[in-house]
Structures are given as structure tokens and as C-alpha cells.
Image (cartoon, rainbow, N blue to C red; front, side, top):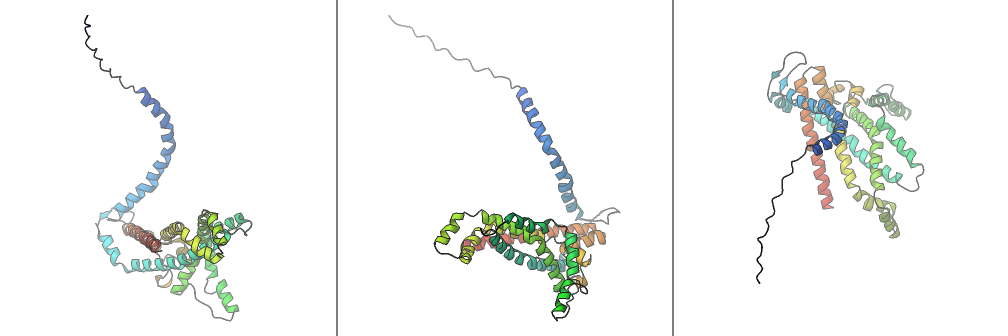
Length: 317
């Protein structure tokens, strides 16, 4: 008896289920409060961050005194910027002040951080607070204090030199005296902050490395040069780049100490002070915006140069 096989029953294709919008609405209702909570930040950032940036770029191609109509001048202001002797003098002054302040700051802050990280130091928190206080002190107040210290007639430094039988020094009338005074202000204000940055980097180094080095008979100087400094290179890169960015934007110290003209011979004129003088002193807002974008290019180039030099030294070492 033969069994007749039935034809296979073909399964019917699945019926597409219409996508409901209820899930999307519920997801939106859950996410909407989160978006609304962060929206003020982006709105304020667009108003006070992106818009001034875009407007300054637009303004750099215009000639405008702040009152009358704008006049498009194209690249003329950037071309004049490259031939402006005052602008190049401001660049040189800024670089010299930056070098006078940054090199001692990095060297001294690394040593202070290494000393603070010692287990022999007690009440480390008090030292950290004391080191950080100058960083949050008003720059105007710091400039006034240092102005009295470096005063040509009644300055404390000149009084000390006179008591030692030495002659007075016209700190605020000589080119290097003005730059040293500005660099001393920057150094005093930023030294504690960078010391804490290096201290955090030292505390992140595994203590087992120091213990192994001491077991092998290494002294403090060898530990500092062979362990601490090599492992602090990323922190040092951060410090050099941030000090470059802030050092190229020095403004309040020379303005309060020397005035808007940068002192005698414009030897204390920095890039940002020159920008301020052109924009708000001479009402050349378009040229001031061009100076600002020139400063942006300089900061980017010097930051990249610092990064490449440090990277190359790490590879060589």
C-alpha cells in the first residue's frame, strides 16, 4: 500500500507590523528633559563663543570704527599686518617675556613638586593651598604690588640695592627691566599652579619604582633624573603648551604696570596689548580683529612646534 505524500504546506509570509510612533514618543519624552537641561550651555556657548569668533573673522576683512558703516577691504589688513613694525616688535616682546617667565617656572615648579612629594613633608595640604593662592589672586592687585616693588624711585628692590651700597636701577625705564618685572609677575602667579600639576603627575608614578630604585642604592638625585623626569614628560608637554597659550596672551600685567603704550620705547608692548590699543584706543576694530587672528595662528604654530620638539626628544631619549 503506497502512502501518498502531501504537498508541503507553504508558510505564509510574515505580515509586516506597522511601526508605532508610541515608542519614539516615549523615548523622546524621556530624552527631552535631558536635552533641555544641557540646552542653556550650548545656547550661551553659541552666543558668547561661536558668534564672536565668526564675527571677528568677518570683521577682520572690514574697515570699521565701531560707529560708521563697514567697508570691505579684503586681505589688506592681513597684508599690512605682515609689514607692521609695531606688530613684529610686539611679537618679539611677547616671546622674550614668555621665555623669561616659562623656563624658570618649569624648572622651579618641577623641583618644588618633587620636594612636596617627599614622605618627610608634613601638612602637605597647607602647602598646596598656599601655592595655589597666587593663581586665584587678582592680576590687577598683583600688578600693583609688583609695580611698587619695581618702582624706579620708591621701589623695594631699589631700597634693598641702596642698603647694600649699590646704585638704583630704573626697572620700568629699561627694556630688560620692564620685561623682567612682567616676567616676575607671571612667574609668581603661575608657579604654584604648575607645581600642583607636577605634584599630581609625581603622585601618579607607582611607588614601587622608587622602592626598587632605593633598594638598588639610587640616591635622590638619580631617582629624580632617571625616574621622575622621564615619567613626567606628558605632564611637561601639557605644561609647556598651556604656558605657551597663556604666555602669548599676556595683557593685564603690562597694561597696569606700563600703561597702554607699553612703556618707554614700547618695550613692554605685547600682542594682546597692541590689539587692545588698535581696537579700543584707535578704534580700528577691523585691524584689531586681524591682529587677533594673527595671534591665533602664532599660538597654534608655537604649540605645534613645542609638541614636535618634545616628541622628538622623547624618541631620541
